[in-house]
Image (tube, rainbow, N blue to C red; front, side, top):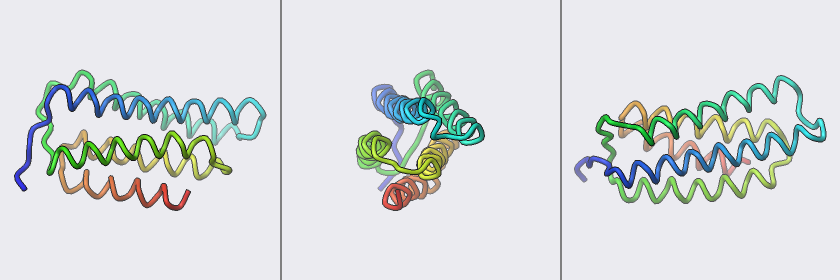
Amino acid sequence: MPQQQLTSLQLTGLANNFLAISQALGNYRYSNNVGSQITQEENQTLGNLQWTLLNYADDLYTQSAILIMDNVEQSLATISNVTAQIQSTYKTLLTIQKAINVATSVTTLGAAIMSKNPPAIASAIHGVFDTLKAA
């Protein structure tokens, strides 16, 4: 299937997904930090990942360069599905490391999207799914 340029509406939807994941991570971080269930190092790691995800959302909202992906509709639908799963997963994670793993996999996806590399995007989407299965 030929590569396609993302529309402004699709970019906004993608940015909304990264913002929602960042917010879910922030909520997880806050709820675990209140009861001191999280170490200072873990809190810093989660904070850095949350900040990176927020930056990706912001970059996507203001993206002026052309983003090209293989099979745009399917990829965007998959990312929306992943977003919903992540929001749900953060409510039930029992270990901080699993939260870090999920956030790291989504950060890798954001980096792949920003690199405009379709094979890296596809690989990163699979990486997020694999991480969610392990969580």
